[in-house]
Every structure is written in C-alpha cells, then in structure tokens.
Length: 226
Image (cartoon, rainbow, N blue to C red):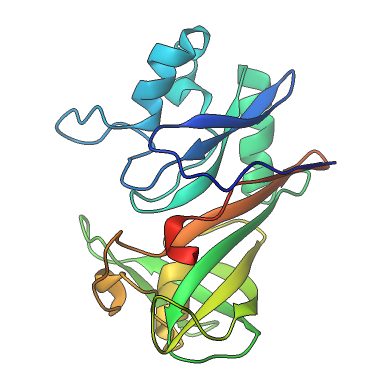
C-alpha cells in the first residue's frame, strides 16, 4: 500500500497517513522534533501536545524517531506505549524492518553507490560525529550503511550538484547521511557543519519515504528540489 500526497509545501506539521496504532506526520524544515535546552516551543513535540493532546501522556508525545532541525519529511508517531516500543525496536534493527529513504542534494557530480562506515560521537557537546572506515576504531562506534542512486545528475537551482535518493539500511545513526557522504567528498548543499557551502534553506536533506508495516508513505518534494 502506498500513500501519495501532493507536493505542496507546508509550514506546520500535517498528517500524511494514519492507522489505528500509528501515523506519519510531515515535518517542516526549520523545526525541532523534540524540546530543546532553553524551552524552545518550535517543536513537533509541542505541536502534538496542542493538536493531538490524547498523546500527551506518552514519552515525547509518541514520537518514534527524530529528524534534524533543517530536515523535512516523514516523521513517525505511535499512539500507545506498546506500539512506540515495537516501532522503536524496529528502527533500531531489532524488529520488523522499517524502510527509510531520503532526498539529498550534494555538491559535485556523482554516480550511484553505497557505504558501510563507522560513526562515533566526539567530545561531549560536539555537534559533529566522527566517521571512519570499519574495523579501525574503538568499540563505541556504530556501523551505518547507506545506498544511493542518482535522481538528477544536473540541478536547475545549483550548478555542479547531484540529487540523490538515499536509503538507510538497518538502524540509522546520528548524522549518518550528512557525515557519511561528506566523508566521501559529497557534502550536502547547505551543510556547513560538514563542509558544504552555505545555502538558503539550510541543509538540503528530506525524509521522502517511510515504509511501516508494509505501508509506504511519501512526503512531497521540498522547494529546493524544484
């Protein structure tokens, strides 16, 4: 089963697909997923407390995973404790598979490919993660795997850029797509943290598709894909 929404952009969260036990929201860019230090209320969690108040008793209002501040697209929310636990296990690779694919606009001209790399946190409070080849780092590192195909080899709004469709294989790691592609010399447009050139709209990364319990949900393309 596939859910295909319109490509119209949204400035606030909206429901893309809903079942008895979970639903998928569209998360706009420039919005945090959960509460930040300092009490920032521009979050999906805060929005859920107002617009889906029946979820307020759940941890993080039922949010199953997170997307970065600049990343738009599919965000999964559970309606009860059992479902949240089940789906969080699935996201961590310890349950039924959840498929996740993203759109990423990267600098330069590239071909389809894949990576299997190790990701580890830097010192406490660092915004970045460290990336290394597998097997040459400490035991706290986590392996992340991606594969991608070229969606567009040229882009109307960015010279010398490639639009990739990236699929996360297995559990996702923090900044896996951003840091992993940058490590390979393919920084995302707008991702200054990992060496990309500054761009309007910030990091050009979009959670385009999420497949849960055999149901595929797609979020319409962001403005920078036009």
